[in-house]
Amino acid sequence: MNLAGVSMGASGIAGINTPNAIDYAMLSKSLDSDAAAAQGAINMINSAPSPSLDPNVGTRFDASV
Image (cartoon, rainbow, N blue to C red; front, side, top):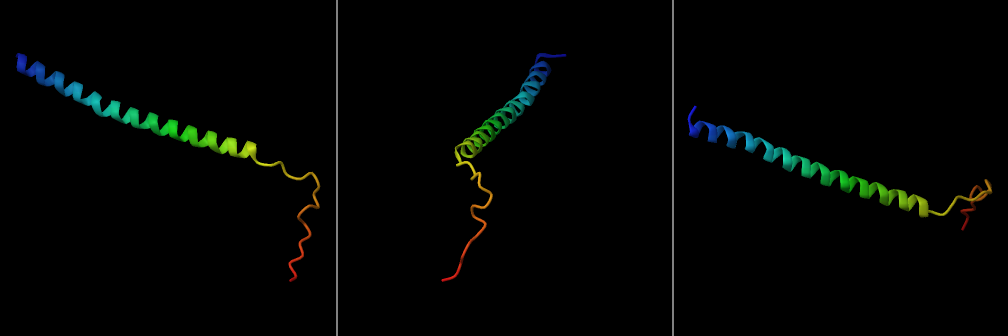
């Protein structure tokens, strides 16, 4: 095996890791974004007013004008 063959083989192996690193970074960023969106939804649900304890509230509605 000559030096040129070893060099080409090493650069080919190193080139395989670059797309994997980019894919991993993109997936990680996407998961972080999803987690932030989910936390925002949870915060919105937690800050919503509690429903009325009276089951009759909102059941009678007069729409006559």
